Image 1 (cartoon, one colour):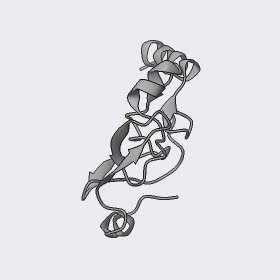
Image 2 (cartoon, one colour; image 1 turned 60 degrees about the vertical axis):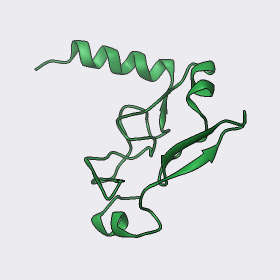
Image 3 (tube, helix red, strand yellow; image 1 turned 180 degrees about the horizontal axis):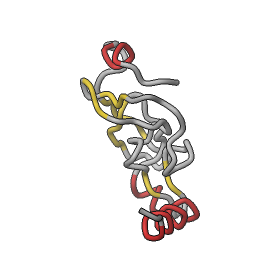
Image 4 (cartoon, one colour; image 1 turned 45 degrees about the vertical axis):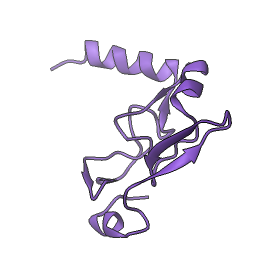
Length: 101
C-alpha cells in the first residue's frame, strides 16, 4: 500500500476511529493503522507502538487531513508490523548510537 494525497483525501480513510482491544479497553488510532491492542496489552507483551509509522507499518513522511502519507514502503523501525519488539528496539538503539555520520 502506498500513501498518496488521493488516498489521504478519501473520506473513508480520514481521521481516527475507536477500536476495542481483546482485553475490553477502547483506544483511538488512525483508520489506516494495523494496531489491534491497547497500550497496556503492548506493555504486557513487551512490545511498543511504533510512532515512526503511526502503527501503519508503512514509511510515512507527513500527515494530510489526519491521515499518514508518504512514499510507502515498509517502516524500517518496526519492520512493517506497526509495533516494535524488544529485538527491534535493540536494533534501533544500536543504529541510533553507532551509525557513522
